[in-house]
Image (cartoon, rainbow, N blue to C red; front, side):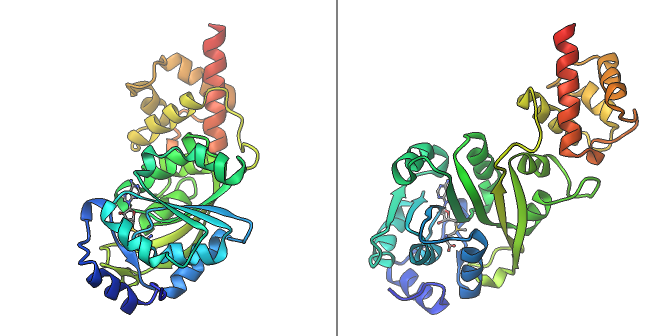
Length: 291
Ligand code: SAM
C-alpha cells in the first residue's frame, strides 16, 4: 500500500470507498510526511515498543508506527473506517485494529496482554472535540505509560506547557504537570490536514514522571483546590476557595493554612506552582484531621 502521507494516495483511497468525513468524530487526516516523521521521532519509537494509537483514521500514522514499532494496536470509533484500514494496513502483520471508543476500551488489559504490564507509548492525532478527556482518562486510570505523543490544538498545547502567572496557565497545566513533563515538538499548520481544521495544531509529548513530583495526601482535595482557584480566576485565592461550592472550608481555616505555609492573603491562584497547591492541600488536610 502506498504512503498515505502523500495527499494523492489519501484522495485515491477516500474516493475508492466514497468516504464522507464525520465532523462529530473530529476527522482531520494528516497529509504531510514531514509531520508524520516528526511524530515518530518525538515519541522516540523503537522496535522494542508496543504502541497504542487512538483514532487511526485511514491508517496514515498507523503505517509509520508499524514501520518503527514492534507492535501496534489502533482503536477507531468509526466503523466505516474499518474496511479501509484492512486495505491500507494489509502489508503489516504487527497491527491490530479495534472498532471501539477509546474511553470505553480496557487499555489496562491491552497493556497486560501486549506488553506484559510494562509502560506503553501512546501516539495519536487526536480528535479535537475530546482531547482533554482522552488525555486525563489515560492519566486517571493509572495506565502504565512511558510517553503520550499527540497532535492537539495549538492552544491546548500552550495551556499544557504554560508557566505560572501566564495567561495560559490553568487547571489543565497543573493536571498535566502532576503526571508528566510536557514538551512541544512541533507546530503544525492547517494545510497539513484533510480537511483543514480552523485552528493551528501542535505535537506535544508528555513524558510520564517515574516518581511523583509532589507528595499529596489527598489528590482529590488538591484538584478541588485547583479547580476552585481557576473557576474564579479574577478573585484572590482565599475568596476563590471560600466561595467554591465544591469545598467546605471556613475563612479562618483557609487563612490559617495560608499563614502556616507563608502565602500572602491577596495572592491569586494563577501565581501558585503545583508544589504550592500540593503544600496547601496537605496543610488543609492536616488541619482538618486534627480538628
Ligand atoms: N490518525 C489519523 C490521521 O492522523 O490521519 C486520523 C486522525 S483524526 C484527527 C481523529 C480520529 O479519531 C478519527 O479517525 C476519528 O474517527 C477517531 N475518533 C474520534 N473519536 C474517537 C474515540 N472516542 N475513540 C476512538 N477513535 C476516535
